[in-house]
Amino acid sequence: MNKGQLERRIVEYKESLRSMDTDRWLGEFAEDAAVEDPVGGPVIKGHEKLRAFFEQTRKVFKVLDLKVDFAVIIPPEAVVKWTTLGVTHSGLEITLQGIGMYKFREDGKLLEMRSFFDQKEVARQFMAPSTG
Image (cartoon, rainbow, N blue to C red; front, side, top):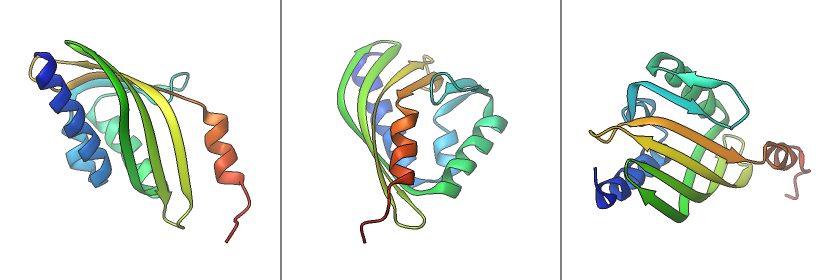
């Protein structure tokens, strides 16, 4: 894959996440893909475990809107600085910044994804008192 193709794959991944459609999101990954989200947590490997991971995510969030702030792409890998707006089913908005490391197969499927972000900041936002 060339740089332009990987740029498109990153956009497609972002769109699949925004859709909150488990099958669409799962379709971005190779059958034996490994995801560490967040880094330091367990490595989730294979479609069955990835499906369970995303279904759990969908139970918390109704929207995950990832915006690419900056990307360095050196095929077959990319490092992306991102900001994500998450909206829970109760309407709580969470803003998260981090870095994603992606490794792609020649056919464009994700082989590896690692997400670096501050879990304590996420917890703080969940625990912050409502201002409404």
